[in-house]
Length: 311
Image 1 (cartoon, rainbow, N blue to C red):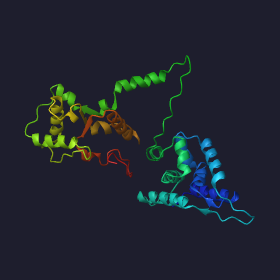
Image 2: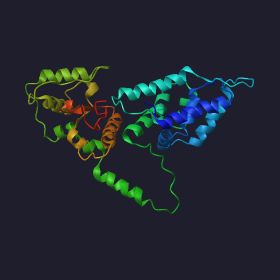
Image 3: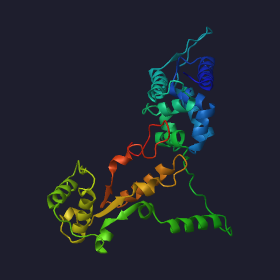
Image 4: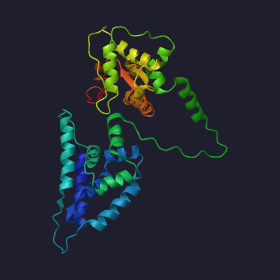
């Protein structure tokens, strides 16, 4: 159940604590041991952590704050409740994935440490800019935390950056690539006035104007006019026939087909979806319409995985 490399790390943590005659072995001892654990160290490097600085901070904290046992007898170092919770949390998480053969690794324990929010171990990880989301993204999808761009050297041509910028301009923003601006379609005369669905549009407007629980879900058989209601909303916005709170709103229709097309590698789909959501957050008046929303379940999921767009 526990991988051999993790067993070695745990053993070394106890050996080190006993040699230092520490009364307890803490979450900070555990994180210190994980710095030399292959899988955990790989994750930390991918998250742009400075392992040497992290080790120095942990050593200083452990030395100053861990009670020691006097005398010359052998020390029976006891794990703290936090230490035990972390190990149990990691084991339970791996078991919950439904794969009985999967072993608990140092990377799993690293994720579990973030459950001890009040510990100095988590404080020092945050100090290095490492969050639980960064760790999970690398473990689940192989997404590394990008390093901040360094200053360009004088006289050095940044041809690669220019190429990337040109490629980005050619492709357009995520919103342009994977959504349709229904307001623009209405202004261009490509959306006709809605007939026979006035009550449904009014209900959608009422829900959107709520402060909370403001996500309407349109349910119905194929062809009854669910998409037409979203188009009718966009048309009414362009005609200024909506409450003031929606007067400046822009309705975008998410194209799930385009979002999934060409996603060969793990993380491709997630990066696209996050790009769309990030741009929408930058537009406080944006309204996202997801056509065929049931296709979100399973979209972008890796085989045997539990993560998909609906999560």
